[in-house]
Image (tube, rainbow, N blue to C red; front, top):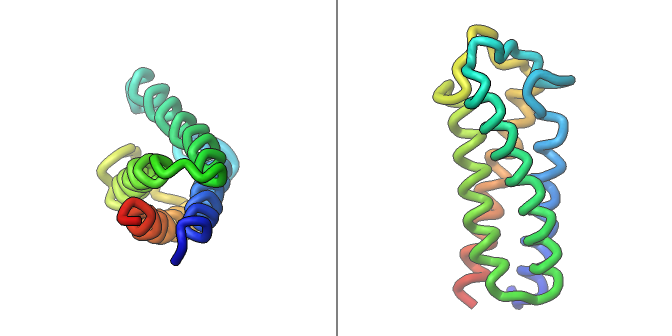
Amino acid sequence: MNQSLLATVTAALLVWETLLLIPMVPGKLIDTRDFSPLPRWQYNGFNVYLTALGLAGFVVAGFAMAGQHWAFVAALVLSIGHIAVFAADLGAVFPVVRDPLPVQLLVLEAIALASAGVLAVVAIQGVRL
């Protein structure tokens, strides 16, 4: 694959990951679990992390489309961040709450985890160019 195609695929996957995050906001439409047992700082910190991950995804996607080679490294870091979030939730590591994982959230997280893995592979290919 040439760098232009890899940059486009990287940007598309970054935007895809961010768009998958939007409906997964804790305590809202799809993620209906009760997070009240978590300390407020953990809940707020987790939301800040998710927001930063999403915003950074849009920014890095723009730089990838602009042909900035460093965007592949940033995309790899972001893909690892996505993998960590979804693997931790699916593995019941964090956040740990009494409510079970809603089925819709389980499906979305599984899709997001798989596509974050694809993003990591594509980003590694871009770094190697």
